[in-house]
Structures are given as structure tokens and as C-alpha cells.
Amino acid sequence: MSELHDECGVFGIYKNDEDMNIVDETYLALYALQHRGQIGAGIAVNNNGKMTYYKDHGMIPEALPEAELNRLGVGNIALGHVKYSSGEAVDHENLAPLVMRYIKGQLAICMNGSITNFHDLREELNQGAAIFQSNGDTEVISYLIARARINAASIEDAVREAVNKLEGAYVIVLMSPSKLIGVRDPMGIRPLCYGKIGESYVLASESCVFDSLGGEFVRDIRPGEMIVFDEDGIHSFQVIESKKTALCLFEYVYFSRPDTVLDGVSVARARQRAGELLAKQHPVEADFVCGVPDCGIESAIGYSMASGIRYATGLIKNKYIGRAFNDRKKNSEYLMRIKLNALKHNVEGKRVIVIDDSILKGATSRHIVDLLRAAGAKEVHMRIASPMFKNPCYLTSDTTPKEDLIAAKMSVDEICRYIGADSLGFLDPESLPEIAKECQLGFCDACFTGNYPLSVSDISRSDKYSHKIEL
Ligand code: SF4
Image 1: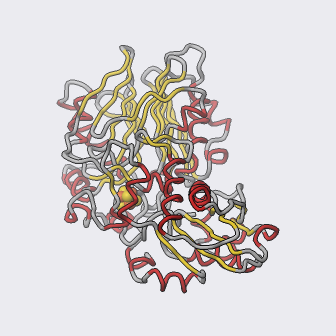
Image 2: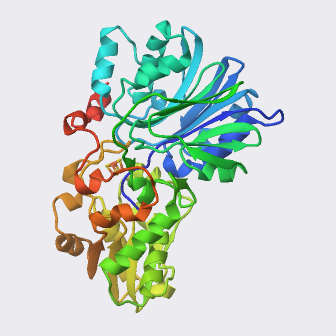
Image 3: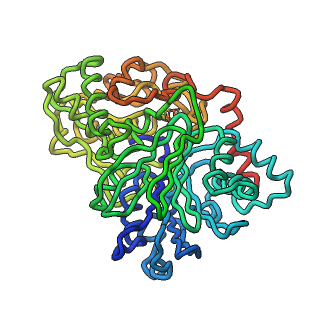
């Protein structure tokens, strides 16, 4: 139950099947991506060059009411987005997709990630008298594309020119009047893949979407690749080169759904492996092992398999509270009590190993230990299926400051005392890449090791949100 906020989720569909309703498909796809963002959601539909859209705050059912979806038209291309952001002021203008008019008609765009040279790009555009309605990265990218399109021979050329100005971690999905386009950042930090439903093409942050829609996964978009779907089929271009790749390891730890296969590795399997490694690195005698829902469950199963200690349910999560609710009530004890409860029947009188995905600030872990003790646990041994989270991530929507990260200011023993556990163990950072060892990409593990894939001078400018909130 990470205290790190979620990523955003992106989706795009290019329809080749007569009887397909792409608004319905997009709506369902966003349900499959709901875990990546609960602040808001939006759908944009391309009706032969005329774009309609609807977006609002909240989880899918509240953000996208049926009456509004019915007004979007039938369309042949659509985009969908679920939003999470702790840094940006999330007013309506910052929701996505962003639909704009420019020299070639209309353009709709959405993204996931963080542009680290946002300040410079926005300042450059400001000097050209650009007028912004939002304070987010997406509008800056759309401006860059619109400017480039003035002289570019095609939308593909304009996107190529624009993304070569970006630094950071991102995936972008956009639609022009006749094309659906996806781009993945040159280091492949953020995930993007494509699949098929019938004869239609779909782009999504995670492969679990294709399963949910009854479609099939085709492949991951390569780092620096632009993929284009149009009436002639699929076109692939390597639009940005990079000497290294750095897929976000936290996607395996927390962001992605367990039924997603990310760059060749099952997320569920990666989490189980983390549990197996933990069992070897931090063994302890106990009566049973349980996981903190949702992301700790697979790791607890892995710990159980490797240690021979039986797996059982120790904590029950209220499934009807979105992670966005967290923001309204912060980490209040009240909220945490509603979100999570201990299963007294299983826990009472037992020595419990509890596995969670990560510890950021420590308040949630302390609450979990309290819950288990209040339910009668004789001993509580906490194991964390990732290394100590010591460094801010500048490459997601959430940049929790270093001073708030408990591992940046306390040792393992001090954290153990703070959360009130009998023992505490984190995954060894050296072994973290093993959880996704079949992946052909390099990894970003900067939040654990401090080895950022971008130069520190680039990312140190990423206190961009303070700038954004001023607006
Ligand atoms: S710093 Fe951590 S959360 Fe951020 S991109 Fe790298 S691995 Fe992912």
C-alpha cells in the first residue's frame, strides 16, 4: 500500500471494425486503468476530423456519466485518460485528453509521466506569446507539436520535432484528424504497448487493458519509438535515440496491475520473486505470512513459497474506496481505518510476517502494525518488497520531497522502532533488478539508489510543480 501516488493511464483506439462502439471500448479500458489515477478521467472522440470530448474529476463512473458519453458521437479514433497528480493543481484545465484547434484542424493529446525541462520549454513558448490554459506538461507538448506543424510536411514530422525537445519520462498518445499516434520516451522509463481488438488497434499504458477488452497484446512500444495507426495500417519510426534505457522498476513494485506483462515480464511474477528474495534475505520464524493489499499480496505468496511458512489473509481492504480519497483526508487515522482492517480470526495469538510493497513516509506502515497488534498478533515482522525509498522521484507525477521520505533520515532499526514492528527488512537494492531479469531494457532504480537516468542538473529543475502552482 504505497504512499507514492499513482501514475496516469493512457489509452487510444483506431477503429477498423464496423460494429465497434469506440466510446464503450474506451470507457471499459479506463476501468482497467483506474488503478493508475483516480483524480479525473476523460475521453476524446474523433468523428471524421471533428473532435468531441468530455472529462471531469473523480473515478470513472462519476467522471464520465452515460449521458455525456452518449453525446460524444460514434467516431473512428478515440483517446482516454485517467489522471493522477499530486504536484499539479488539478483544476479542470489540467484534466486530459486536451483537445485543441491548430493550423491543421483539431488535435487531441494525453500523456503519462513528467517533462523535466518543462520550465525552459514553457518559458520559450511564453516568450513567443503563447497563452496557456493549464499548468501541465500536456499543453506544453501540444504547443510544441502545433508550432512544429507549421513547417512540417506531416503530423509525424511535427511530433518527431516536438518530442526531440523533451527531456524526462513520458508516453504520449495523440490523435490527429486521421491518425492515432503513440510515443514512448527514449529511455523507455514509462510503459506503453499496443494490441488488437478484432481488426482495430489499441494503445495502452498496460497490457491488462487488452485482456479486459477481449483483445490481444501485440508488443511493447520501444524506447524512442513513434507508432502510427491510420487507414494504411501501422507505421513505426525511431524518432529519438538514446544510449541507455531505464524502465521504471517501481512499475513492477507498485504502479502496474499484477495481470500486466511489462516489457516481457509478468508484474505478478516480478512481485513473487521479490517475496522469494525477501525470504532468503530476511528470514524469520512465524506462524503465517500475509500481504498488504493489493501490491503486497503476490510478494507474500512468493515469501511463503520460498520459506515454507503458510500464506493466509491478515488484512482486508475496503474495495470501495479509491486511492484518490487519500488526498482529501491525507493519511488520517480515520481514513486508514476505513481503508484497511485486520482479520482478527487469523491474526489473534499469531506471529505474523506482513509484506508491503514500499515505505515512503512510514505512517501507513505504523498503522498496519497497530492494526495487527490490536487484532491480537503476538509478533509483527514487516518485510518490504523493494529497497529503502531514499530519493525523490522526479520522473512520475508524484515528487515526494526528500525530507518526507523516512528512509532518507532513519536507519532500518529506527524505522522499525517508529512503525512499532518486531523486525523489519527491505529488499537488497543489488537484487532488485532480478525481479524482472528477463526484461531486455535497463532499469531506473533512482528512488532506491540515487542513480538517476538523467543528469542531476536536468532533473534538479524538476521542482516545476511549485512553479506550476503559482499560476
Ligand atoms: S525514481 Fe523510482 S519511481 Fe521514479 S522512475 Fe525511477 S524507479 Fe520509477
